[in-house]
Length: 350
Image (tube, rainbow, N blue to C red; front, side, top):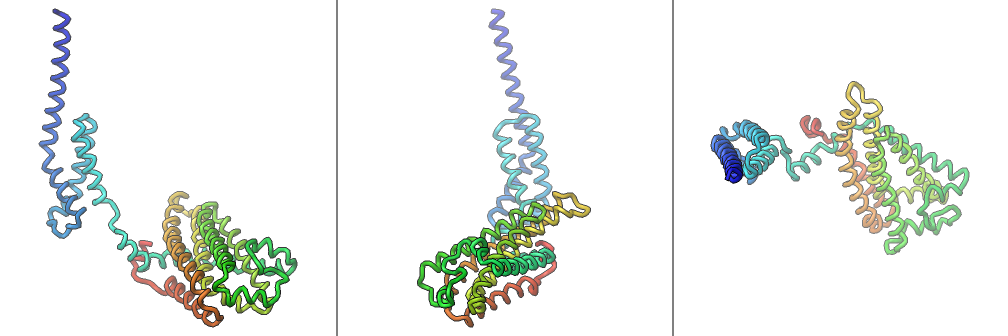
């Protein structure tokens, strides 16, 4: 009998503890539930796009109610209140945090900010690196020309995807590669190879920028060396300006995108190598945000270049039209990047 009495006492004690915990949880919830419900109603209205229907008092109370709910969640965790209360508070605090501290811009708002000045401001913010990248691209083109001029065997090393465009080809053959070839599959394959190569270079220039900006320097020189080799080939056959027109219709966009990608990669690398008074991680994070905006635009430019390459260059089969399209695109990009300034707020946001 004593044993049964001992077990009974323990069971009663456990039951009493459970009831006390449940009572404590009920009292805790009852004392704070009106604030939780008000916060829930405000957050729900904002989530449904009904912010204008809220009163000024509700809007001003939102951060206070959020902090109160967060404090309640902390107490609930420390005192091991019931699972339902914890789950409700965790969900409520998460939703409220997003409305108080989360991003204010939706997709369309971000696009308006991006095209309305954010992208161009980010490009202007890396202008020193763009000058260096431009100098390297010009130097790479000159190096490629000189290497092939001294030894034509360099051509195959610099232009691995060449077809009939090679040293020794006649002017007629070379002319046939840039005029009257809209229906030739070989030209489509060559164009796809060229675009794939340039897109890969643009991505690598940015992705490897963390290595103190050195890899983008080498990539820019190497990629434009192939361009210099092809310029040597076509100018040697008396078709230089025809080839430049063939390239310009999409190249003004594509090469400018590579220039921006190289500048963005060097911008990140320079900030890490010379952070100034800031910590290295802080400097890299700030530069990375600006470079990421630039690269988002580079992706768009590559898409535009692909469309021009796939359609415009094949449909326009004369040099004047190709120069017209290429020159117009170049003028458009330069005007947008360096002349379009919307507002100081947009510039600082970039």
